[in-house]
Image (cartoon, rainbow, N blue to C red; front, side, top):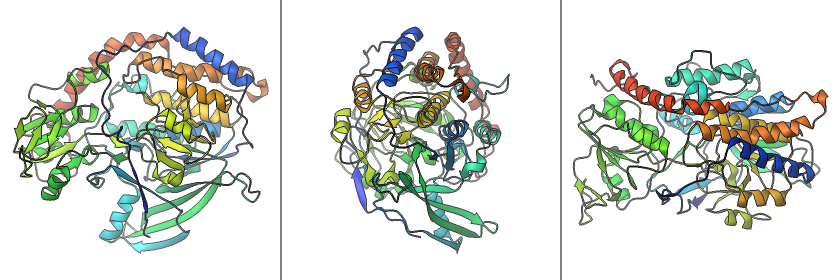
Length: 563
């Protein structure tokens, strides 16, 4: 089966060239009480002037079975909605699902992304698992960025727990990837989600049906494609089919489509030295870098953690980043403080060539320094949230104003390359709230926040909470300001972000018939903010302990390297 994407869309320039916030910005931080009072007012306005759905929502598709998709499916099921979950990997857990295989290297330059224009035809076939077919299978479900010594960087019992499924008492704050994935597997098993799930199944195309067509019982039709190994992995079975739904919850995550900035002469450098360039999504084993000179491009969490793992392993580790080393983000400063003096800091890259523009292996930086002996360049430059399965329903834009221009015609979803921007509370598409996004808010957040987003989706679609009218949703989009710095993460931000949803949903739940027995949400305990200093200290210890264990982590493939 050949999949073609005949149309390509440019990623907006504002995304790949996005600069950080100015270092002197002061973002106002609200109190819990201020958030409660503001949200109560908004909840009352929504009740007075609600958005009215055209028909009841009884059947919902959830795209993704990771940290956002699982609580979404559970919440829908809890509130009486039929749910189907589609996950392209062969297990749950999203980015915490490890595979020895790695994703393909991104295209260079990767400033365009492909958009499907029509659904696949329905068919079923079984083929021999030749190398060519195995590559197709890999493209069907590209492996995540998980590597063998990956640990969580937000405290599991405090920031990675769902309200309805706490970690066991005494759980360590920082855990290896497989324990995090087991949490999600246990969650899915505990709430019976596997019975509603299609694993190894990608959503290839999402089609919005004509609301006026009486022959279409549902508002949405999804084209689905399952690809799975059979007969001891000697054969691959493909199946393509369609299913229809009243609503769609997209919870596919933001870390699927690697992004590489288009530096000067990068394309030529890649042609001449193709084996030197990878994206952090392809990184697996620190042992593969013994004795090498490595340039890490980027200065955020993935760059920091890979640099730490290569420190003392590679001959030299260079780190190139935009902007100053000291950031406005306190959580980023905490992470960067764990970098040793062995890491050679470099400014942003000017060109993958020498000063004369000759592509000869030299890399020139913005301070006019040159490095000539790089064996590997690891781009830790993030991802584009492509949403290609939305086809012509999706387009790129960079501002709320652009999104508003599309309000009555044109693509339904406007994404800035990281997340949809024409949504109410970062979830519901204002033009058609039967399409929702969970797990891609406009601020840094933790896993526990996805639970409250999921509850909002389920309760609104089940008629247990109200959205405001479209005009009020548009007004909120243009005027709302996060009650905490969206570029930072701490326990207070987790408390305030969840409190907005808890207040709204609980207020509307109180107004329901007692027979409906809607649970009252607890939210994040405000007293946890007192643990922030301890959390910072534990984070530093966590890094030291992980690095100390490097020699005990045995990869399944080490290319013969020994420490």
